Length: 268
Image (cartoon, rainbow, N blue to C red; front, side, top):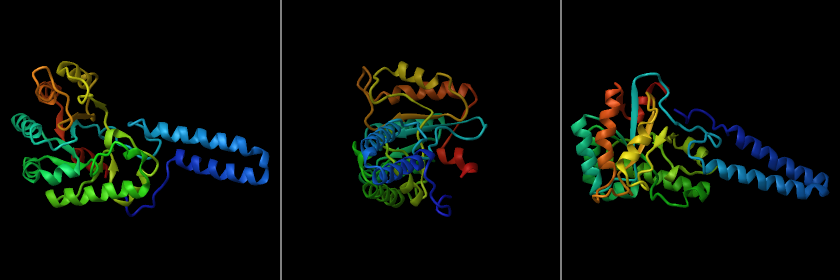
């Protein structure tokens, strides 16, 4: 895929590098410009940080937001598991509806749930990389720390499933300029989403379902959570109430559920 190609910085990162070089050169030639140069660099860092806080942004590098082809396909992605209580019930629903999903798993949880992980794979779903520990400060880590998180997760998931992940989703979707070159080195593609249910915060299944169905169409990548899921009024993970309705409504639109890998295959 990408390893045979040289990493290319995004236009924003190229402009950022040029600004830093220009500010340094200007300060050497014209010392009176130091204040302006410092202000420019600070403003640039604010822009870079803002780009990293926007999960659907492509300013820091390629970012898959939807499936690229005009087929009647949709991708259901499920984050932050596997969860020993919730994930088996999610799998039951998916099996009943004959739907395939992509699980972006936290590798530390994968390591602790080998039987559950094997069930996910055995039932035809894919497991992709959602980092080793899902650290809340992931977007503030340096290149070395990010690479360790991803390399460890790749190995753990491959050992558990026999398949090396092809896609990565950043914790909470947040990242920094160091992520893209690491993804290139590891032959991973960044995947975010078309729309998400905010089901770690919203407790109302109807509201979550409505968010995900609004203007839903072929090529969408949808995001729900089996780990860290909000609880509905009856105390169960809200994804368990959302999934049956969501799947039925989208199936009525003649949309076929595919893994991210299947949906992206002709584009890889």
